[in-house]
Amino acid sequence: MAKIVVFYENRSGQQQIHTGSKALGDFTIDYTGIPEDERGGTAKQLLASSALYCFCGAWAKPLKRAARNMRASKARRH
Image (tube, rainbow, N blue to C red; front, side, top):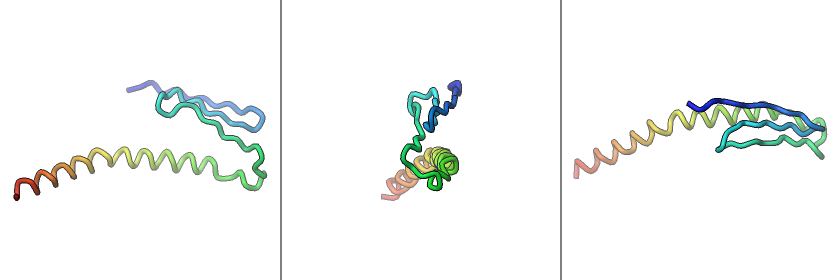
């Protein structure tokens, strides 16, 4: 399992999250030009995105296996 390294910086309204991941990389949350009252919900969006990614990842292999089994079953019937 890969070592997990994540760190966070906040520089002048730009929040940077450094993941240390080749696939994910680093990303910036930039509120420049966004009114204060429209900035809420970022943490919820990040959490929901992470949960969705985990959910899809957990189901990807079982669904692919089920699809293979269904194709194999149909092929045996013909």
